[in-house]
Length: 436
Image (cartoon, rainbow, N blue to C red; front, top):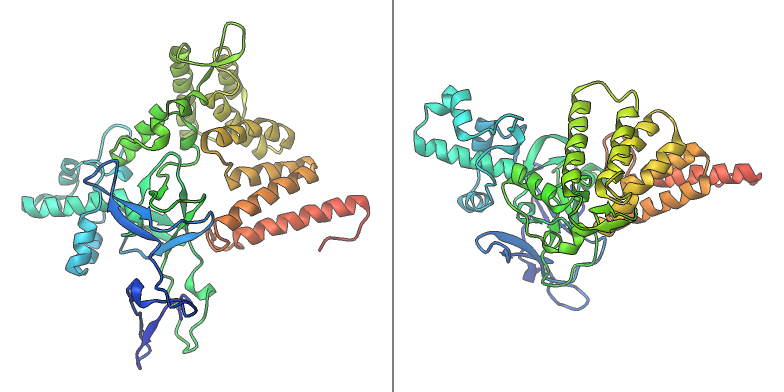
């Protein structure tokens, strides 16, 4: 069948539809026991009027918890006709489920500019068609736009934003226990023998990145990997700006979690935790933010001098392990990587790896791969092999079928190719036959 799983009702005209079964009807043939849904939606313990997704069984690291199909697809949140057309075509129960999702802030974060929020009043000014509707219909459309804007996801094989009803129930944590991935399309799974072309359902997968005990909430991060490396005030501000809530996850409530990120130089020159360096810290954070803003609007960085100056000034009050210095050095690493200076790229990259390990308890596969690539350029093949091995281990735990990039091999296979290339380089240097 199109996704090589489940039961499908195939009609004589060639159309097919999945057969939905309740869990008690699906049993293990060997034991006769009914399968248990691995997750359930329940009241959120942090905010009782909201919902959350909980594990009904112990979930193992690397386990694909569920796959969800999109209910609504639109190029952007401002596409009112597209949103309302799909919404009105749903069954009443599906509409109720969508309307019960969080609506986020009273503005569209995806259309937020530097100077103002995109509010209902902004929409009324921008769209004569919308402003002529009665107030009740305006409220309904605006509510739907907010819901879609707050709960939609991107997909590697689609240019649209997609709303997944079940995944929309997965709340944020600054120390997440799961990630989202894009499973491979149906045509890579199996071909229909009838000659019908399988339809890419643009499913999204929820994958455990650590063991999740029964009864524990399943969470993902709404922030990027880089944003998660910042202290609580910065993270909370980003979440408030983008999603309209203040985070009270376990990491945000852990006072010690911030102390390991915010270290300052003491009178003796050693790193210390505390608040004595806060005024200087705010100044350095502001200086670095201004630099990044300018960089995003201008030509690519042609010289590292300004960044080096920021790092040197900040080093007078901030300890080398301070999160801001680690980020400055990471941008320097990216600059040296683009300018083919691998030794300097590796030197400045190590700090961000240490920061990820301290802040999140793990290093992202992308950073391991980045270091491996630079070590290859540097000629340090044994260390590059170790980095690629770490990447492959992490990707296999996140499932070898997720994160496909159009026009490229599956990530695991790409890393295997890099491992073979490194082995070939090592064996060639020693005069042995090729590892291939």
